[in-house]
Every structure is written in structure tokens, then in C-alpha cells.
Length: 197
Image 1 (cartoon, rainbow, N blue to C red):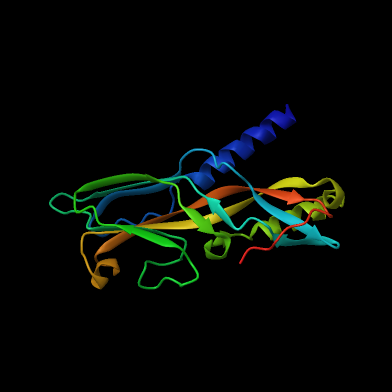
Image 2: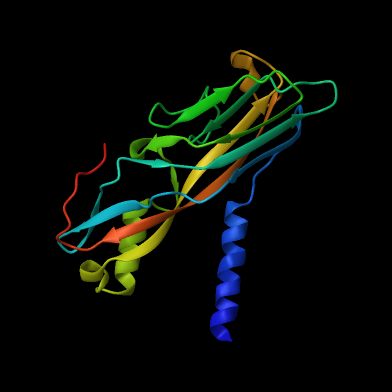
């Protein structure tokens, strides 16, 4: 019974993490959402070197997302952007990933499956290497037997009713974000690989 209760708590927690959060709709957008859609095809692999996990061997990861934006009455969604940055494209770090759309209509939805280089992913609460080393703290057997862990990639979704650089300023756009759970495979010592860029 305790195991069932704990499992239910984990399922509820995971549901909260993948739900759309952080929406601030004071601007021209009536509703805005970004969420995980489907199951990732492959985990991110991390290998052990010496006494700890140190190398990500997966060069990129394919995400499965659905976005939706609806402008307020009399307005249109002119630009919609998904990014791994902590801000819209005007403030984006060149080391992050982003894609934008120009729907020019009141309501816009899209399913997307970007394959993003490991170096351009923003992790919330620690990257896959940290996730594996947290597993290692629980049991040293992870070094020889391997384990499965979880990390959370961070995405922001922005929408505006304006075009051009002024469109992403606070008065013209709204945004939301999501923590996207990623399965991490902690490979045991002796498994070779090449660290991603």
C-alpha cells in the first residue's frame, strides 16, 4: 500500500512538471500553452569515467512538443517562438536553440519534433551528468550495473501580435514555459563514447 501511494505521488508530480506553467497573459494573447506530446524515442546516454559520470555520449535529442496560441478578440498571433533560452529571441543566448513561426491568424497550433544539439539545451535542476551522479550517491553499484535517471529540459513559448523586433517586448507579447522530462541512461564504467559538443 505504501508503494502504491508513493507511485501515485510520483505520477502526480510528473504530471505537474509536464503541464503548461508560468503563463502571464496580461498582453494581447488570450491563451497560450506548450506541452510534451508523445514519448521520446531514445534516452540521453551518459558514461562513467573513473569513479563518477562525466561524459554525455548522445550528440542531440529529439523532443516532441505541441504549442497553441490564441490572440484576444480583434488581434492576431503574428509571431510565435519556441526557445530553450530564458528569454525571447531578442535576449536569446547564441548557445541556445529557437524556432519561430509567423501564422498571422487569431489561433495557431503546431506539433513539432526538434532534434536539438546537447550544447543548446537548457537543463532545469541539473543536466544528465548530474542526474546520473545523483543516482551514484544512492548506490555505488550504478558504476558497474548502470541505471536510469531523469533530467528536465527547459522550454519557453512566446507569442505576439506585432512583427519586427518590438514584438517581443512585454507590452506586446505573452509567454509560458515547461519542464520537459528526459530519460537518461547512466552507462556503466568501461562503455566507450564520445562527448557531445
